[in-house]
Image 1 (cartoon, rainbow, N blue to C red):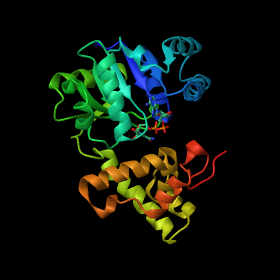
Image 2 (spheres, rainbow, N blue to C red; image 1 turned 180 degrees about the vertical axis):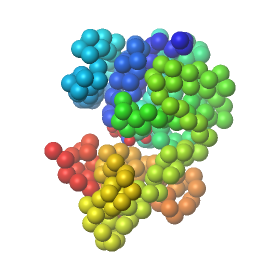
Image 3 (tube, helix red, strand yellow; image 1 turned 90 degrees about the vertical axis):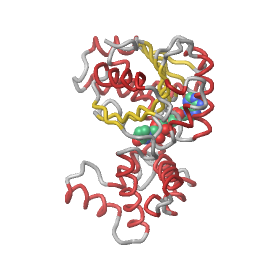
Image 4 (cartoon, rainbow, N blue to C red; image 1 turned 120 degrees about the vertical axis):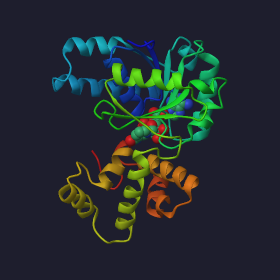
Length: 286
Ligand SMILES: NC(=O)c1ccc[n+]([C@@H]2O[C@H](COP(=O)([O-])OP(=O)(O)OC[C@H]3O[C@@H](n4cnc5c(N)ncnc54)[C@H](O)[C@@H]3O)[C@@H](O)[C@H]2O)c1
């Protein structure tokens, strides 16, 4: 259906693991890279547990569970990405780390029209594109959390991205992965975070200033506006480090006070209370 069969995913945190699962369940050959053997083991377990839950809930058959696992491979060496048709980078939201990965991918991926994509929430795609010798083949593919569940993907071409790359990416995302794609310009926050992040920051400011308890803030939006999850719970799910990084990027881009991370958010990140992934954020997790 498309010319993309072999996918590489860099980073196997909550997003990388979910993206790898989506691609493998869609029938693609998926190789996942992490920094260390330990991080790889944690990521592999995260992916395996998510797949097992899908099987237990009857969303995939035992046969699909086995074949999906067989299509997944794991490495700590990006050099093994040489034969990939598409690479999706999903490492920490840090411009320097991502830039270095794009430089390495540019060296190792041999197919010259391979697509090099980033799942970044806020870093300008053009900065990653110009770190490579093929800026016309770099694009943002922004999945939502959890990737196997959320239907939406934002496609973000850099100023340098070719129309052909956009069309091939959209075709793959919709026809192979079964997602709904929307398009956004390469501006920090794209569409969804530009609307969502100021709302989450407002909830954190409201909690910080003592206007209401965390439960009342979350219940307010769940029971009053039919949101499936209140803003403090959602911040914990996204990861407070990611919320703060995205807010910082948006503030750097627009200099608007509504994008400025409140001090409490910064202190919680400093304390390592990053939400669900560390077991503690606005709430405690087992
Ligand atoms: N959390 C969300 O809700 C969400 C939603 C959409 C997009 N994103 C974006 O996805 C990206 C990843 O976010 P996350 O929530 O999965 O973070 P995470 O902290 O759960 O995972 C990041 C992973 O990257 C790995 N990593 C770091 N440097 C690496 C390297 N050089 N090579 C390979 N792996 C490396 C880490 O070991 C870690 O496992 C970020 O750019 C974030 O902005 C996050």
